[in-house]
Length: 516
Image 1 (cartoon, one colour):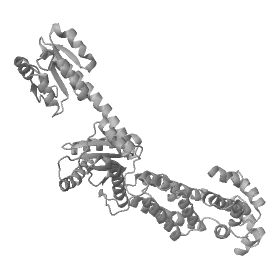
Image 2 (tube, rainbow, N blue to C red; image 1 turned 180 degrees about the horizontal axis):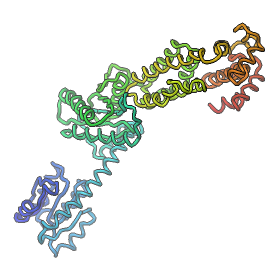
Image 3 (spheres, rainbow, N blue to C red; image 1 turned 60 degrees about the vertical axis):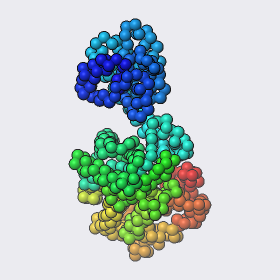
Image 4 (cartoon, rainbow, N blue to C red; image 1 turned 90 degrees about the vertical axis):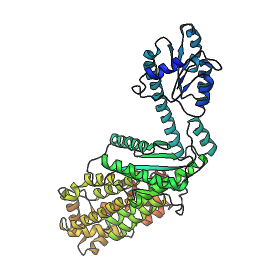
């Protein structure tokens, strides 16, 4: 906006400054400060170029008003030589530059560039502050409604009718290339750019929430709810199309219900999280929050390792049905607790890592299963939905058990039967003699054979397995130490403590205290 009471100055600045080259649009020319003030109250202006001496409200008073009421607007003062000292008094109002009126068109481009640079810096800073605030609300770090509204006013966030759109970015499931944090960062900024283009006709605030998530708050002032509830999914589809055309990764979208009050922002975040979770679990590109679905009351402590221990126990027992049943229970718990995708992937990596350790034997070094270990981890990381990850892990469990089962062709049949007997009867009063009787051989012969085939004594193998089971009980139950000893087939508490310390490196009490 140009403000000057001399018509020739206004017309000259309009005609002889190449505003297009400066990437600026001249939207209004005011004849005095009072007229400029009225216009500023109805429309935002980035840069005001104003004369100092004008009737009614001069340029210094206008600069003061802008400083106090429109701090985002930058002011450039036009002054005569005699006014220069007077103009300097406006420095406290953050005036960008002072230009002498003699040939001002030559000096204006530099002053405008300076103002634009300050605006860009200010917008970047404001964007960072808004991002931080939105993330804090998203993470429930700021939850009090009045505190939220005060912060919104402070950061210039204005909401009328609005809803939330949340995006999560993941690798395509068939993409073998490992995605780095830098790649994700670039992808997220590209999606942010796409959303800015898509929502350009509406007031919106898009913030990066995590490594691979961002959320847009889209406000539709004076729009009918039914209209923008149709516009939002269509716009989101446009974003997904842009992503599909230019990026090789998957994007899932969750959309909240419409809201009318900024006090409802935390509720809207809860809805959009639930909608996105539904999109990921069922591999639906876009999912709306369904109010009939129960909202989680907050994440419950989920003992993932308890489920994984059960799965591993059944893998060792070669029980496919029970292992996959436990996997289903784990994923049901994930869904019930609204667990983030990254945490679910971490559980999958742990399960596979523990499974590979079961078959870390020299005779299997050349097997396809072992050589695919790196690929398995990559497939877990690249899973784009919870359903894909469940199917991947279910198939993996079947393959692991098949691999363990095939060891009967690789090593001594008796060793295999002994290990199976230990897994099934470790909690009973068994010893070398009873184990030998179960496989119908002499105990001395079995002892020598087992040592030759495995490299360790059979009694060591039995005690090691018992102590591993004892560790699980100490982790996951309120049993006393002597009760744990009985549960793993050792009646004498003192002997149990001795055996536990030998194989675990610490006493049962110290192990339990370390956990809790």
